Image 1 (cartoon, rainbow, N blue to C red):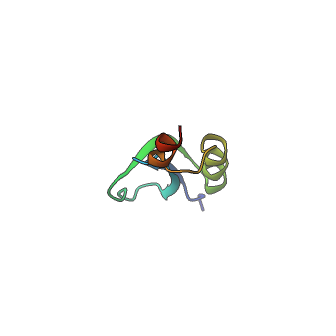
Image 2: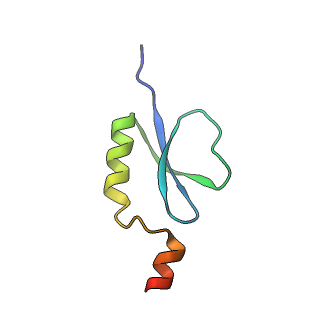
Amino acid sequence: MSEQRFLVVRNDEEQYSIWQEGRALPAGWHDTGFAGTREECLSHVDTVWTDMRPKSLREVSS
């Protein structure tokens, strides 16, 4: 039995999530090009998502 694969996805506010590979992405979410096991994807999100604030809030704060 093969391990389930996921995609790392990001929305327009630059918030990240993971999504089961092969399922249609929800509106407003885009594939980042990273895929792997659940654990690999969550580890990648931990690495790339360093500021949890939505993009619109980060832009106002700068």
